[in-house]
Length: 365
Image 1: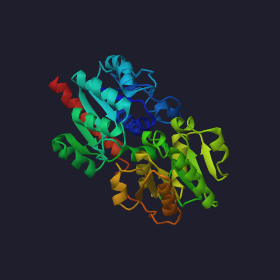
Image 2: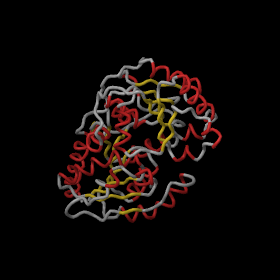
Image 3: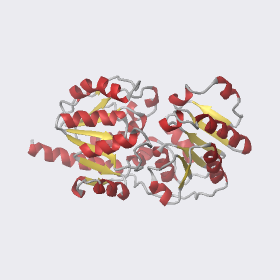
Image 4: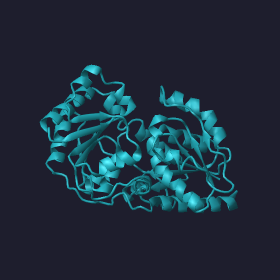
């Protein structure tokens, strides 16, 4: 039995097409939702592919309902007992990425001696402090994992350099490419419109000393480029830190909106002339759609996009904001398609490997 563990919006988006492929192949599975995100899961595969049954012999999908609140260690404790019970029917536990839900699933699987498969393994910034705790989480999951599904050859190299045997690492491509094809109408190579997408949500941003200066720089940049629209679908962690006084100072071409559904977000991104972000997933989607991106971070964990010439790294400071906006508005970053994160069949490839593992586990049980 295969259990797919998720709790956050990115996990739902990237595991949804894997669930669909498993179901299409008749491979039994069930899902475990931690409750890490709630409202942010609206308009994602959590409402469809991850909520539906997984075929004959499936286990019962579980929802643990433990929201992401307080310290990571406390949350892991709160979710731990429920996770252990939910994973009892599973032989293979699948986690994705570097979220606290992925860590909770990995820890429970490891403690119970179950096979652990990590989707999007090997992503590294090589800086334990940025992003935190994600860099720590993904490294530790990979150390526990029985099988690693890497999106790129660079990610596989990272894993092998850390001691993983090449035989347990498969390069599958990134399942976000499958998600774009399955869940959106976004088309690669869409002609650019007049808007720039902004997303900033990382802990280093909202808890850092440059938070307010970055916000002010975004407003200044919007005023300097009055012909462009700045569209920011804002994360709840950021929204609750914005003062009413600051919101009233935002120029009319700087649109701060509630999070979009996945379909709307993908279409908005596809027609943008660029994206300014600290989200690794958005960088992957932008590269897939041919949209230039600026990573507003000190270090990048998506260097493949930078190497392909479709993304640049700028410091998460006021100066970095102005530099990044200038790069995007002047067309200094090429608008061209770079399949650095693989093709549309990534989810099918992950599902194929999982089915093989499931068959092999029957004979080794």
